[in-house]
Image (tube, rainbow, N blue to C red; front, side, top):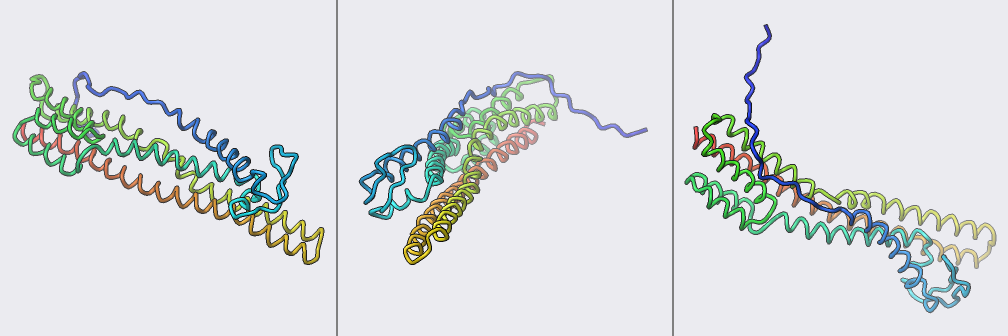
Length: 286
C-alpha cells in the first residue's frame, strides 16, 4: 500500500487581512498623455516658426521648417519619431515619480532589519502588544505583513481547539495572504520602465534610419556639393533620434534597477517576518 502523509487541517478562522482598493488609472492615462504632450512640445516649442530662418507658413500637422537657428531646433527636423521619443521620456519620468512615492511608502520608517529585531525581542518576552506597536511605527509593507501575522499570532495564543502545528499553519497562512496583497503594489507599473528601456533605443534607431534614407534619397536625386552638405546636415539631425532614444533607455534602466533592488530588500524583510512569527510561536507555545 502507498504510504500516506498526515494532513494538517487548519480550522477556518477570520482574517484581519483586507484587500486594498487601488486604481491603476495612471497606467492608462500617463503613456497616452505623455505622447500627446511630447507632440505638443515638438510641434509648438521645438517647431516654433521663430526657431527657423525659413519657417513653413502653411503650418499643419508637420510643418517643413528649414534653417534651424540653434541645436534644439535641429531636433525638430529629426522627424515624427521625435515626439514619440519625447513622450517615452516623459512617461519614464512619470513612472519614476510614481514608483518613488510608492516604494518609499512601502519601505516605511527606519531600518527593516532593526524593526524585525525589535519584534523578535518583544515576542521572546511574550509582549505581542509591544510588537504590534512597533508595526504601527514602521508603517511600511513589512510592518503591514507583520501586523497581520501578529494579530493571528495573538488569536492563536488563546485558541484551545487547535494544536501547535495547526496554529503555526494558521499564522503562516495569514502572513501569506497579507504578502499577496502587498507585493502587487510594489511591482505595479515597473513593466513600463522595463518596456521603454528596450523600445526607446529601437525607436531612436528607427528615427535615425528614416532620416538616413531621406538624406541619401536627396543625395541621389540632386547630386553635387550642395547635396553632400544637405546629406551631412540630414545625418546630424537623424542622430538626434539615436541620442534621445539611448538617453531615455539608459534613464529607464538605471531607475528600474534601483527600484527592483529596493523591492527585493522589502520582499526579503517580508519573508523574514513570516519566518520570525512561525518560529517564535513554535518555540514558545508548544
